[in-house]
Length: 96
Image 1 (cartoon, rainbow, N blue to C red):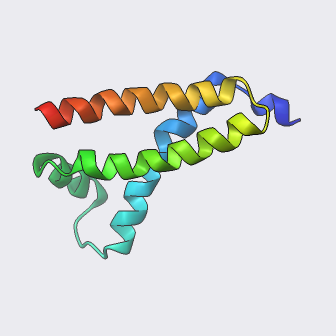
Image 2 (cartoon, helix red, strand yellow):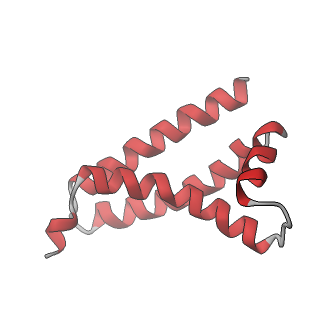
């Protein structure tokens, strides 16, 4: 049953959603009156989005290590793939 979850695309989806969920939690905890998408746009224009995404990638690291150490093969690869894509975006934001 659990081996059915060992899919590359599922790992990529999880790895993509974890940093966005962390941003959502930070948004909700901040009691911000603006919409979530305006919050993301403001972070992007103020050049703070990369800093918050780096915090979100810590969640990816935790999920990656948990799945890697429990015997999954493809799921951690998908998480790693999305983390690399996020990392390239963060470097782009840092240079820009």
